[in-house]
Length: 314
Ligand SMILES: NC(=O)c1ccc[n+]([C@@H]2O[C@H](COP(=O)([O-])OP(=O)(O)OC[C@H]3O[C@@H](n4cnc5c(N)ncnc54)[C@H](OP(=O)(O)O)[C@@H]3O)[C@@H](O)[C@H]2O)c1
Image 1 (cartoon, rainbow, N blue to C red):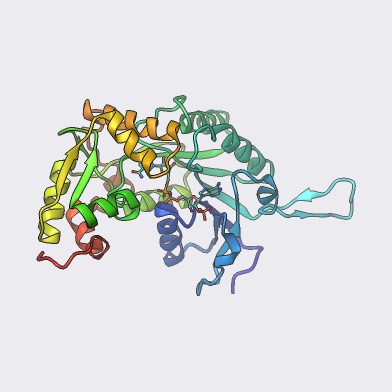
Image 2: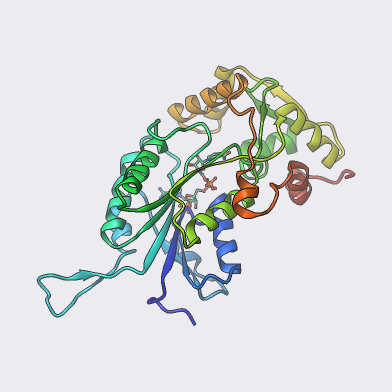
């Protein structure tokens, strides 16, 4: 039976695409840590069969929920309570809003003050340390690491294979129109599996030796959206086509789904940089860190094809 005195790994965004896979992989492993699964719905979901897994409420925009993660143990000297946290490592996933970098740095500092030693940040392949948004959090962790004040890693995954099954805009367009939309032209990307990102995350969260570095997490196959559409056609047994939009058209499309204008513009700009070759690269990070080859897009598509209203041949 697990107890609150056992060390814990806190997975922020723990119900999301990557976080949920980190939780599953940690829960299936022999690591003795408790696994704290943080999201805004928190303990409402506390139904896990595994006693090491606990859901906890957490909202980036409600600092009361931060404090609740780090209960204070009052010693005999009540004027000077000592803080006692059993959270040893935190996986950081940003909220889906721009401008969250200072909030994330504030959280890192609070957690460090409560004894957390290791932080693993999920950023993105386009963002360098010191760059915008998560690039600021990345630089903060790197600087702490250089001063020996924290152990850290920054994962910089490329575009997820799971986007086509998890993002409603893709699911709907494939299911209802047999189309995938982008503003990337014929440019190629090294689509990565969220399972592989999670596997890299688990290693960087749990390895005895501190990772202290960044990991560009890329798949091994370079595929354009047109080639993705061809694979989906093969898997679903019906023709799926790629619609190549301008950046402005893509921004309008995202806004029509309710995405805020600034976020939609950022997404359009990302597709434009892909169009000019920014993601045309692969590496061996997944194999080197996990010992397993990166998963292929067709295998992913076969495993989830029902979500696109399949029924065709393989
Ligand atoms: N998709 C891609 O291709 C791609 C590529 C590279 C990098 N990324 C980066 O990956 C990150 C997203 O990761 P993901 O796709 O695994 O996540 P996700 O599936 O979008 O899930 C987001 C998680 O964050 C939680 N969350 C949302 N708002 C929150 C808030 N205000 N406070 C606390 N928790 C909150 C959600 O749970 P609740 O809603 O219950 O709170 C959920 O657990 C983003 O930073 C993105 O830039 C994505």
